Image 1: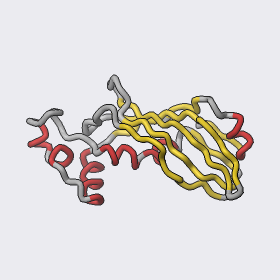
Image 2: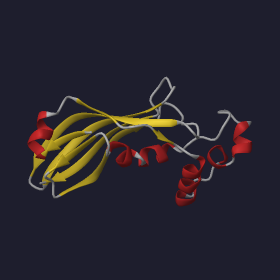
Image 3: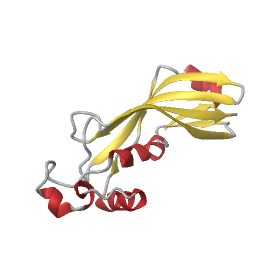
Image 4: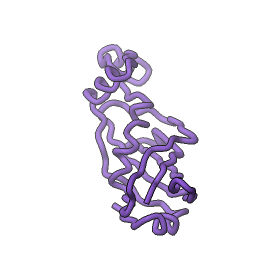
Length: 150
């Protein structure tokens, strides 16, 4: 875990890779819960028997499940102390270059791209790359933006 103290430390870290999170396993239960929460119950996600005969040979995680895990995956990579609040402001780009078969292990790496100070706080732009153990390509690459207030 990389610990930064305030926006000044964050600004000094621009252009660096902040590290990786520990591995996290994507379970069928997690995929099923996400399907129920979002209504996306396509068989490639929730029907292991049918998916075994499908194009991936198993059920796969939703791309948006992987995306929704970013805050959880990032929390072990770095933290900025001295903030009153930090909130998700959005994402400028998101891609899912590879699938996440159920029972895969994933982790996130974070590169700090830019910090911009403003009247209502600072915007922090990061490139988050989620990789799968044993996978050749990333499973998610997102440029995220957080609003941070000291």
